[in-house]
Length: 208
Image (cartoon, rainbow, N blue to C red):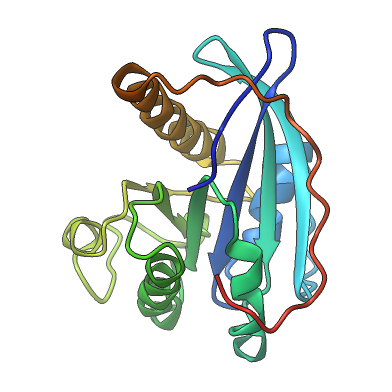
């Protein structure tokens, strides 16, 4: 995980990966969170895109960069280059399509591979929950699934209904900040580098 630093007057920058299989609602989640907007017409992401949001949490200003990674299988090897220097990840699945739930494990495995099994803070979002009736059912018990695959926590979300998204992302940010606070206490590490806007990298054949 890359170093996280800040100055007294400027926000720290957090790079968050948003991944999952095709048409799970990743872009809709980001648009809802950053702009409080929902676009019902589906348009696939090509390669990568990102949106930013400035927030204050735990007394700290944070410039959040949400990297929207394409879910198409043909982009699988290419997208690993975008994982570099991430501070956390959001894995999304479509709660109405069981294959995307199983696909969430593949994305988490990819994250673990790129970070050499370092515990990159990662949450799981069961999106489109507005289309389900409770109790929710999935191919595996979701609690056991998250524990086995080392997700920090899972949330039921709906970009359409604006359900659970703020809570989920803010929880992830808290986990990241707490991990760095612990690092500062144990190693003397200081959060003292101002946030910068990170441009999307060009396509590369190298992995993490």
